[in-house]
Length: 220
View 1 (cartoon, rainbow, N blue to C red):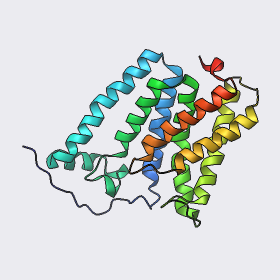
View 2: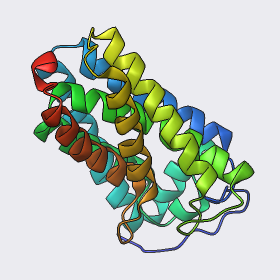
View 3: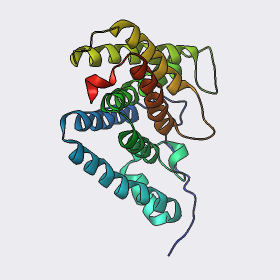
View 4: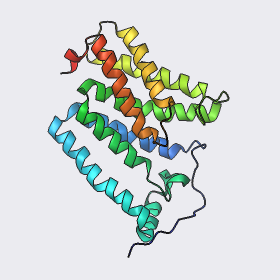
């Protein structure tokens, strides 16, 4: 029987709170996705991602309609769920959908960097913004969070490019990639979750950057 009943539990974190357990979970799971993308054969990494999407995303939609199943899921994932997700789609649905989109349509190196941005820049920018973000830009987004995202994305880009023996214009490309990642984390798009918009916008921007500096040949 399908029943729509809103849950009202106490003790769940809001988006304006640090929520360290969620951030650690986010970084770990997305980094595993990155590692699978980089080190496993393409068919295997895509199979794992597609299977995860087919299991978790429909389950998340069903959770919204079935109160008994919703209560079970909320009980299991209580430590990493936000209050806003109790009766709405979870961030995991947007994350998996964004990851699936970029792996289907973008270059291997572009996808790898976008996943690194999502894994580390997003939660670290959020942490800095919540703790020190006094100068607001859009909603809860702040200048301090934007700077943190830029720094993290630039450093990640430099490390990733250097590891892959890409040295031509590496400093300028890393700085531009950092700006792309920070803007992708900053800019809101309607009511879409940034777990979806950040990897997609990062991939679009990085594709333009890779094309301009002829980087596609390094990650064919």
